[in-house]
Image 1 (cartoon, rainbow, N blue to C red):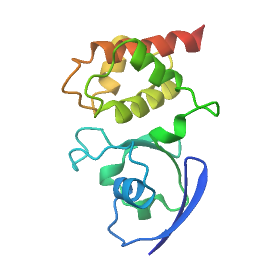
Image 2 (image 1 turned 180 degrees about the vertical axis):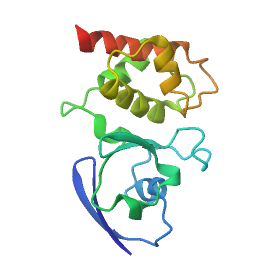
Image 3 (image 1 turned 180 degrees about the horizontal axis):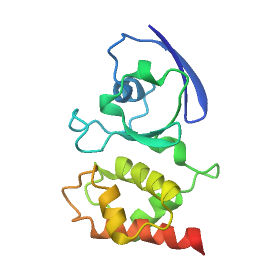
Length: 155
């Protein structure tokens, strides 16, 4: 089947089997490997991308469902000058990553979180990141990274 969508601001058209998952399309067809494929059951959040302005888990979304959509992957958040996105910089600065496997999904979820709830409390941040599993950090520094970006947004 033919699908047409935008990925990271670029129009993309491809012929894919109808059962192709968005994560497979992103990784295998577009060769954008920053979006990680973890659990394949929408539990871990490693595959999180932003579609039409909301974070979604791409491992349980068919690319056919994204017909005409605007999808942003971790590669698509890089500023034009090639620097890190403020959320990526905060994760680095606050040591919000260790092995890095969850980081792309966690960053994408965090960007969406602050876009839709810029004044989130620590408790709300923890609740809203609940769908992203990190086995290394204990989440404290991830929350600190989100709060760091949150402070720069309100400054």
